[in-house]
Length: 303
Image 1 (tube, one colour):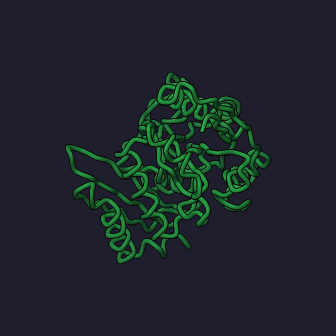
Image 2 (tube, rainbow, N blue to C red):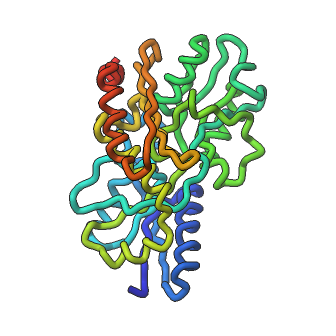
């Protein structure tokens, strides 16, 4: 295989991420001819409605997946948290390179930390998980809906005079906007979304040639952790608009996976962590799901 066509959304962040994949592929395969095909998704066309009203995670991936299935592209690059945890039999999550920072961040023009925000202040986020976690810490806050690319989100913060916004550290890092970050949020409290900080590589399941090319850039620990998160989310029937988080990592040679689930107003919530050998990552993810279900986590989502 001498030519590889990568499909990408057209946003600044998406293209940065896709070019990052292209660059590390060229280091591993210098003679590969790589083309980038920009594909506009439903999520790029509708930037105002809340995600749960227009189809959830699939609005960012459906058009790319259609291009994969019709062999118009060989590889799709996603922010992994946008890739649904369940794929059709014709498609496969092919792994991830080394993960960026998985944490959430608080960005404010007024305050250094969320604790400094005055009672009744306004923080914006489009994530029900972040909303629940904010209300858990600060039930006095007003939460404003927020969507759009990162430039749009930061512009809205500047224009609307909100007290702050919550977003992913990885996106801010990739856009080299670190100076805008006011506070990195403790992932033991603000448990990240499954896949957050990782790039997801997706291919058609019959493309063994693409699998061989990607093997040189896939990070085993990152992919193992992300796969465990996806297994957990699949068992929990997680979606991007449910208040649900899942964060797997390797610390001191031990595999740990933490799950968070809550009702939308955070009045009911559950958080658990299990740990063990990384070779048992998938079993541990299922064990964690069982523990969360036993504690009512599935019921929280509907409230």
